[in-house]
Image (cartoon, rainbow, N blue to C red):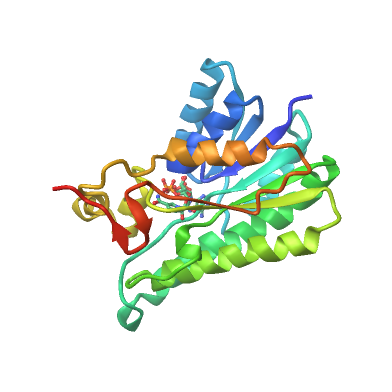
Length: 254
Ligand SMILES: NC(=O)c1ccc[n+]([C@@H]2O[C@H](COP(=O)([O-])OP(=O)(O)OC[C@H]3O[C@@H](n4cnc5c(N)ncnc54)[C@H](OP(=O)(O)O)[C@@H]3O)[C@@H](O)[C@H]2O)c1
């Protein structure tokens, strides 16, 4: 029977690339996000390439919406063996001193409580499959802090804490928890969301960086971790572009 993988935030960037990649690996992918039209296009693309996928419109900040995602998972054509908690993002790059409480709230709601809500809703199905994998797409921002990143790093640290805690709590059950921590990934929308649609500011983040990661690189890491034999738990995979040795150490050419 085809295994089912759920990917949140599948309407763009890392989530869309992960949905494509997991479908190519043979999963039936439930592609979840708020923008239905994008999901429909993605599912059409995956299907045309010979894969299987279903679009599920879902807002991970809503209990009702996530309950509907769990219902869709229950009706999916196979055991639910993989959940990729990818939906998330950053808003703002302001110092703590002047950061927007609303931005911080949004980042906590989506990255942290979204991951919590979706994981809680899907855990029974993942366990019932006999071998479930939970992936948490956090960030190197979940491991270190940087100036202007207070709200995002706080949220990603909390998301990282969920992954670590969950792994301890689930030990002894047929479930594994994998944390993926990407550094700089050049995706179309991450910077636009962070800078309220300011394309110039978003582009400046990657300016002169030879070879930032792209969404497919992270999808490759997720797929590799998730397709290891079931007894192998890659606790944490930190992946950065070669040009980024640390959060503060980025090589740029002019
Ligand atoms: N790009 C980077 O440099 C980078 C580095 C490290 C970690 N990450 C992490 O990787 C993940 C994906 O980032 P990305 O670069 O691919 O960004 P992105 O293209 O902006 O993708 C974010 C995804 O999250 C979804 N989303 C946002 N709010 C949602 C909600 N309330 N309910 C459901 N889905 C929601 C969006 O879809 P809808 O708007 O359609 O709902 C979108 O598909 C994020 O968790 C991000 O923090 C990114």
